[in-house]
Image 1 (cartoon, rainbow, N blue to C red):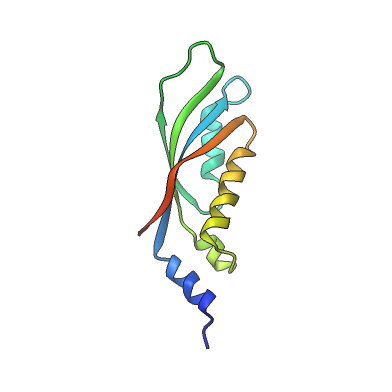
Image 2: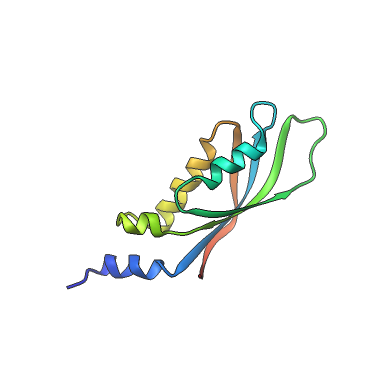
Length: 114
């Protein structure tokens, strides 16, 4: 007999999750290009699109909007996928990258069929 949790996890394999947010980095501590590379290296992240925003010329912080696509397969494979928990793990991981001052989700994460 197949468990309901296993069926739900298998159903998520056909979905890609989208997470948008505002990323604030300290460009003096670390190059934004390197930070974006670290974000792309996080498990399950397949695409990171960076959209520059208007900057405060007096601030050393650089703000941009990032649009992230997440493939849940690495978590499903380990039977550890729960969309809310997994997205929180990913946002916490982004915030912990050296040079990241903050990351704030914009809108509600959503999923689409791949």
